[in-house]
Image 1 (spheres, one colour):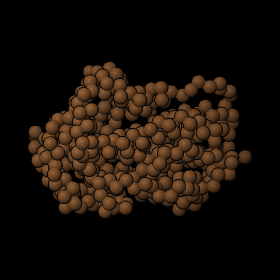
Image 2 (spheres, rainbow, N blue to C red):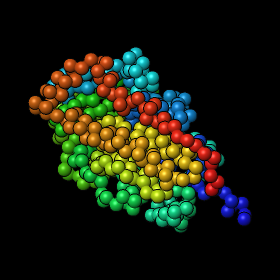
Image 3 (cartoon, one colour):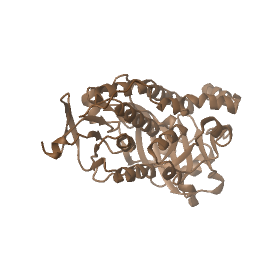
Length: 409
């Protein structure tokens, strides 16, 4: 038998986004060899800022990238909600003191491209990870003892396959077969500009949300305060799908015509917006079959209102690596355990994100009740309400199971 035949087959990953790279890194640290396939010619992340809660920092510790992340994040002093119709202050959540004591890690803001680059750089340094670009995944065949991935560049054999190929996942379409994603009717316009272009009184070191009627605006600093990130969301039935397209500024301003002057002033600072149609899917209990499983948006796509899409994908990566490393070669069983540990938590985030969308966009009596409810809660009550999401230590801790000697494969 030649050396190539003796070498263990790699675990295959479809998709080179944040979730796919985190999975590759976690698996490599657990001792597996990995081949990752990305359809783009160059692995890079588009988009703008993302919010990362304390649960993400548990993952960063496990992946060994905390210092690199901390060098790129901005740390807001507060989470703030303003009423985008009246201009009234609704609630502020301090992110120092009690927040850090409660969750042990910060709440931070980072450019999506910076987090992606950190993960990519570490993956490129690993001798266990091979990354191939400009290759389209077309399907797979699970042969029981291995999986054959069918790509635009030919067939590739691996021990198993992880579909981390996003909302429109090719792997999911074959594995689950549940059709197109659910279109929410909500549109997101995103933009980043130098913070020097923003009036000083409109750029506090906070993550601020202006809640309007069927719309909201989020803004916060990025890259140590050098950049200013804006995300404007509104209801529209104009679009069925769209991703990273140029947004219609005229429609944006029309949807925010009743907003307070502060919101209109910020929106007026941007000439060109990138537009996304927000989509998700119904939560499902089963996204693994045999030696194939899903991760991140391919498994549980969610609306952005909980700011947890990337965080959930990275949590998936840790759990799947832990289960794989203790599987004694039985990756099909590992994938089922991974799925079992994840589906209720990710399903709860999916459904909570939908509710938050309605909560942020409330009008009339609903809006007044929302404001009254938030204003009546103490900081301690608010932090207790976040605990299920941000206390990720127990969530990521692998259950203790009897282990036997590792099976050779």
